[in-house]
Amino acid sequence: MRDTFNAAMKDALKAGDKRRLATLRLITAAVKDRDINARSEGKDAVSDAEILQILAKMMKQRRESADMYEEAGRLELATQEREELAIIEGFLPRQLGDDAVNAACRQVIADLGAEGLKDMGKCMGVLKEKYAGQMDFAQASKAVKDLLS
Image 1 (spheres, rainbow, N blue to C red):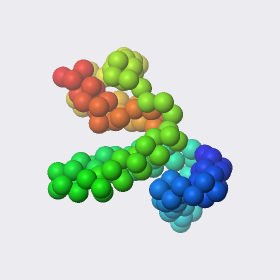
Image 2 (image 1 turned 180 degrees about the vertical axis):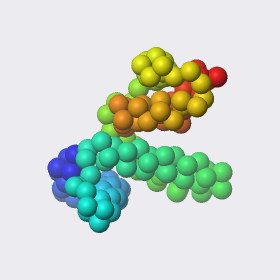
Image 3 (image 1 turned 135 degrees about the horizontal axis):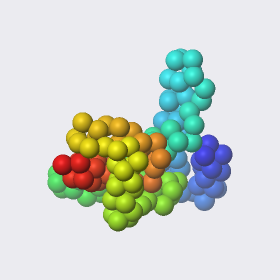
Image 4 (image 1 turned 30 degrees about the vertical axis):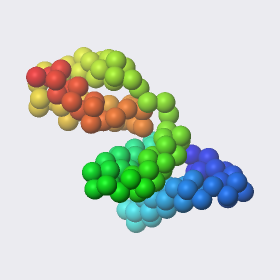
């Protein structure tokens, strides 16, 4: 994934796409920051799965920021956040639809033999491991909670 980001940065630089370039720089900075933290803990550089988690977190931040800007009447900043969101989404695998998320939640619950809300953490852990970057985990959490209730 790092190579993909570097190639995309070169393309954005050549094309003069300032928004895309700035967003890609934010992504690489976040990945490098996580690498530094991992090295200080004696671990290797972050994996592609962890990079997907970083991207998912960045997407969540952009959505929340865009909503707050819209509520405050700062439409130009909301538009900027949504543009960054679209750029970040381009690096994630295709997102699962509602039906697929519900099916994945049902499958994990069945595989683990989860019986109540006390097993929700286990279920979410497995979902995050299996479907990193492929689903909205807030939606998955709600689905798992509904299924276990």
